[in-house]
View 1 (cartoon, rainbow, N blue to C red):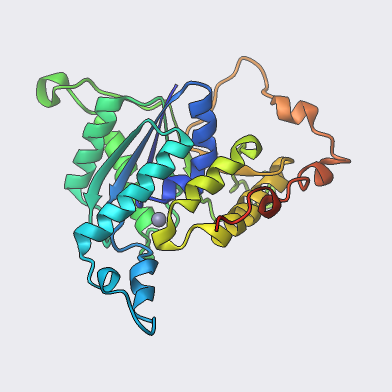
View 2: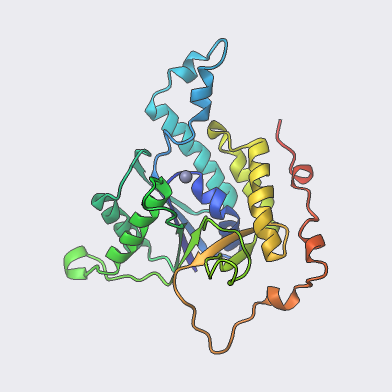
Length: 281
Ligand SMILES: [Zn+2]
């Protein structure tokens, strides 16, 4: 399988689906991350915080966009290596985009048509009315997939391409069944317990935006822990499928067959993340 994530910012791929991508890399799948922005402005904590200090470091306060972006890219590269992402594609947009850009849709379509992934992962387009760069990124990603599906070799140099499935992250609900919220729920969970240390280590690389150390552990304990509770495992990542699935009989997963409702609340809480992966010095 070839898996491609498409996200707005450098760290999004790791925080939303880094564990899932690590599991795909481990089973021999090709994992590609397409990142729309260079990440120079998003969570530039290291640079903003320096000005609060008594004696700010002139190298940090004097850093320009090139240096800030180079540092963010080095962090991203290290995180990608930890996860097993084999190719990083960065479109290097400035990260204050506010709306869908036709040129960006074309660039996404060209990358998708060139890579031809089986599966795409991107953010749930949460709120098209209230500005959210992740919503805009997914609108462009979905438009790019649509555009790649209309490619014609005569005109575009590549054949039409249809992705087989799209998995969306950050659905703004956390509930495990299909009735409470009238069907709006994550409908696929991936158990990332075996690779959770790599997700911690990958997040530890994003020092300039403060995603390392305590924050990495808190985020994974709370967000992936809550998804894990719903999934009946220690840590999980949650997805919402865009397309239906077709089976030759009613599907029941291995995890559902093996679930023990009496003890799953115990098994899901057996790992103390901070004890197992202490904050580096
Ligand atoms: Zn983001």
